[in-house]
Length: 355
Image (cartoon, rainbow, N blue to C red; front, side, top):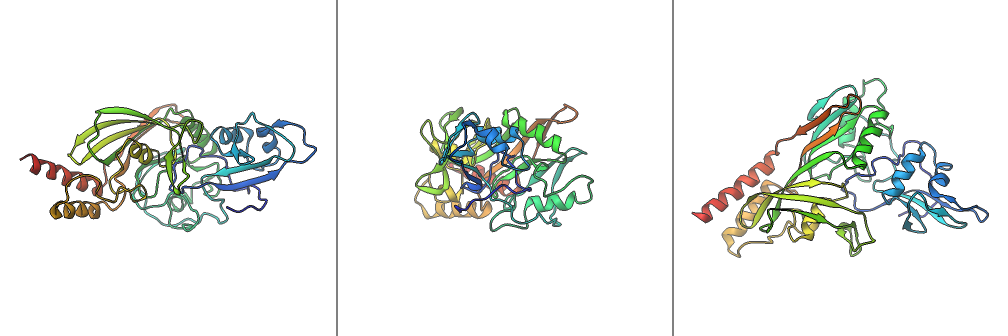
C-alpha cells in the first residue's frame, strides 16, 4: 500500500460502505498528519473540512463502518483527533485513476424505471473497475446502457451501483440513476432493511435444518487474500441466517439470508461452521472435502467442478423500498445453468446411492 500523502479526488466517494467485493484488502484514499497545534476536534468534522466532494454524513458512515483510521486503527466518527495523529481513510476498492468508459456489454436487466435499475449479473463478470480490470466490468456495461440518459454520469460516485457481489458470484444488484436514489438505497443497506437471499451449495451434511452464524469478519492475518472470522473486538460485526433446502449426502443446498453485508460474508461464515462453498478455490472448496476415495467418485466430483467452475453461490432475491414511490420492490433471479446442472448432478448421485 502506498505511503505517500494523497487526497480523495473529485471522482472518489465514501459511498458503498456495505460493499461486498472480490478485493480482499483495503486501499488508502486519503492520508494526513495532524498539525502540532491542532485543537482536539471530532474526526468527522476534521475530515469534512479537508476532503472535497464528500459530505459529513458520508464520512460518519465510513467511520462507523471501520474505514476511518487513526494511527492505523479504526475509529468512530466521534473520535477526537490529536496533534500528530495520522488520519487515513481506507476503502475496499482502489482509487479510480481512470475514467469509466462505456462499453457495449450485454446486461440482463430485470427491472428499470427513471430512478433505479436491477441487473442480474453473470458469474465471472467483475463489478467495478479496479487494478487489473479497468475495462470489461459491469459498471462499464451500465455506463453504455445509460449513456444517453440525461443527468447520468458513470464517473459520478453519487450515482450507479449501490452494492456489490464477488466476481464469481452470480445474481441481483441494484443501480441508482439519481443521487437521491443512491443515498436512499444506501441507507437501506446500511440500516439492514433490504432483503437479500442467496442459494449456495456447500460441502458436508449441514447438521441443523436452520441456524444463525454470528462472527466478526476481517482480513485473515495468515492470508491477506482471505477474510476470516475474528475474535470479539476485531473485524466487523456480521450475521448470516441459513436454512437447509436439500441434502445430497456429501454436499448440502442451503439458503443464506444476509443481515449484514461484509466482504465474502457467506463464504467465510459457512467455512467457519465447517461447510466451505463447493468449488470455492480461495477458501479450499475446490478440493474433495467429503466423500469416498474411490476413483469413480473422484471423477464424479471433478466433473461437477467442470460443470460449475466457480463458487456455487447465487444472489437469488433482492428486496428494497423504492426510493421515490415508497413501494416494496422484490425481485427473484432463477439459478443460472451451471448451478442448476450442478445440483441436478448431485441429486441424481444421491438418488443412485439410496437405490
